[in-house]
Length: 236
Image 1 (tube, rainbow, N blue to C red):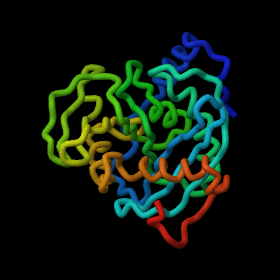
Image 2: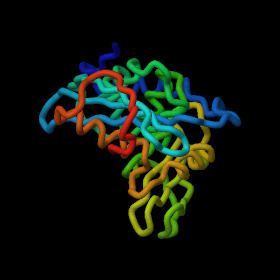
Image 3: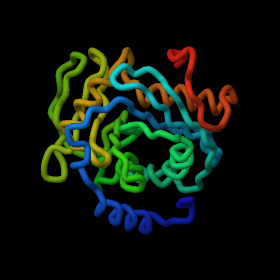
């Protein structure tokens, strides 16, 4: 199991540079997705214990099909731009519990909208070689023009010599989310997928539902392991 606890920031930066060499954006092709995953982490303030979940939803209906819950820990400090070193090890534990992986996974954080193109979605994607998209609540990298106030409005975010992602409005008049490829999928495809994930809330359904599930896990309402959802798929 990967452990980043004792790394310095210099060492972590070197790992990001190494991982960046493995980035690809040409693996999705013309395939049609039937499932999509969402990943999130929760923890109690001041604790090094992490609660990780990966949910599996139907695509594009966004119906919850299954979820995996795992406990992990991290002593790596919270430093902007290095989220993967805190959260990826615990998320990998949840990922390994899923017998049939979702076609693509959305992570709560950046993909290539990152100074070294290595946000948490890229970090996780390179390690697993699985299609990933970053969906972040805050902007970390790149520049974009103001976008329309209406739902589904989008504005390209420029960085790394071109369009690296999009600011996407998910509700009329609310702050956008920030979409970028993590691994295996390109920028236009990432935007197209995430537009189909928008529901009633600011946060798109894959990571919103993952957030709801992982907090129930942290509160002791759900048990560790892999769970198929047979009834009450709209519980979250």
